Figure 1 (cartoon, rainbow, N blue to C red):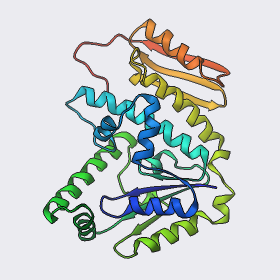
Figure 2 (figure 1 turned 90 degrees about the vertical axis):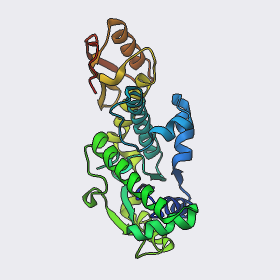
Figure 3 (figure 1 turned 45 degrees about the vertical axis):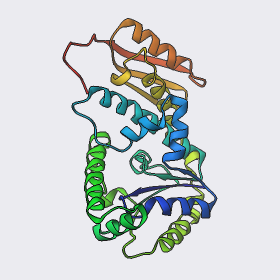
Length: 277
């Protein structure tokens, strides 16, 4: 039992390592393919995921920002749901930030020198060294901005991980063996994430928030959903109209398991030319 999150640099081999670890443990894997499949239930399609996935926010394109905020809430809901299922390897998707402090979660990061990353990309993707270098530079910048903007964290900060492994020093198979051994350790197996009341409450609140964000009748970007006690939801923030307020409360109250709903939503009609995010 447990959850392994893997943050990785482009070209470090982290995606391959994550798949091998999941296979060795017999666990499920949340990668871009399985994430895209899970996101379909929220109305997302693969092409749109590729546009916003782990990318920096678009400060000029309002539509892009809107969709990225929706994506972020969908991502949180899926990551929490996977963690509650236990026995999961989560590749990227902000897993190390979202699951901080959850028992049974081990947060890893896979890195390599630029030379090693460039070599991996030229060999595996069939691109030139110059193109690989540009891909690395652009991808690193995107993920730094994305992590800072959405998680208020510094991308790759070693203090945010339980282990950082360099594939320039360790072969992929050695890294896989180390991570498998770690995840089989007794103290991790005895602390399954599914046993965390905090995670269950986070997951429940996030499902409600994702439902609000994906409803075209509501601008839910100013709404926060909290659940600190099982079954008790609190809605806070702003909406554009009384109709949006009533609809938001109705959607939240319709979820199975809601015992009580407290609404502190305030109606604030939007000001033309002003965007609050």
